[in-house]
Every structure is written in C-alpha cells, then in structure tokens.
Length: 96
Image 1 (tube, rainbow, N blue to C red):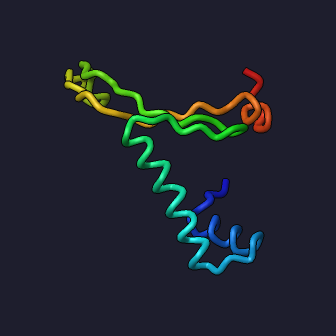
Image 2 (cartoon, helix red, strand yellow):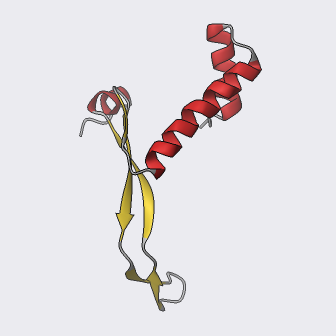
C-alpha cells in the first residue's frame, strides 16, 4: 500500500502542468491552507465527485481504559469527518 505525500503531489503537478517545484509546493500549501481555514471556521468543504469534509463536535463522555478497564472521561472535542460522494464510492468499489 502506497502513501501519497505532499512531495508526490507537487511532483505530479510539476510533471502534468509544467510548474516549477516551488510553484507546485506553493499551490498545494494554498489549497490545503484554504481547506483547513474553512474547516476551522465551521464551514463544510465539498469536492464534487470526491466528497465532503466537515467538523463534528463530540460531547464529553465516559469511556474505559481498554487495558485496565478503569472508567475515564473522554473530553469534548471537535473532529474532522469525511463522507465520500456516491461517485467516489463507486469508483473505489463500495456499492453502499
């Protein structure tokens, strides 16, 4: 299983569009910066044909330490959620 890194994306942009490596890195930083800023501000980020990123707020709750079984408080937090589009789910072979 391969992992696509920031460097991989930059090199693909460079090769496909003839960008310099510096410009490709700048483009990636701008795109991910905008996505991050939107999520921090409570906005959903939707990519047609790919999916939607959202921030969910989870309430505090009681959980258990899996090793000891001792109850522990899991604090309230915000988490990022991704829901793939129907088109994307079909592309990767999930039919649900």
